[in-house]
Length: 162
Image 1 (cartoon, rainbow, N blue to C red):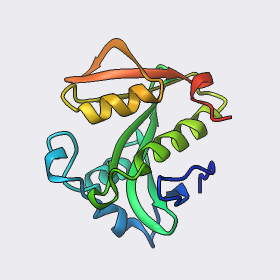
Image 2: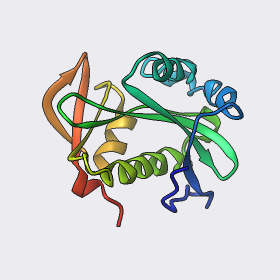
Image 3: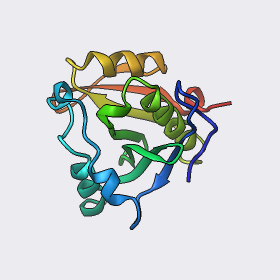
Image 4: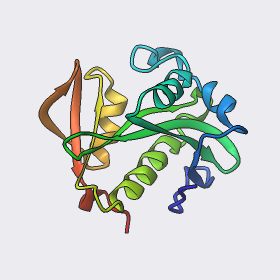
């Protein structure tokens, strides 16, 4: 479990847990709001499959206290950068600060890794909510693109939660 002591706006402790036999179904069933399906899959099950079938991504269940509220994953690129991807917060849990706390928790944990120098992520340029969230966390656009998505980055030093 990764718990940096962050909470959502309701005061629930947000932590990242390994996906395991007892929570994988709840994670797989995480679904976004309908208007977000152009940016993310209909269910987090797709992200779980990517983590289990490809040797790139590592999945975490996002918990708000004892409730599975979402999914987030990370990977390490060949250039040494660490990527945050596959964040999906259940529609019923959105707007409560769970996503922000989950990203900050993963940022802090990755920044502590000895081999982490920079964090990157990408998002659809039309996803205004993602743009605002990641910009507010200090991520800055870079010239690179990932498919049709905007790539942003943040140094591990800036990502460290003190």
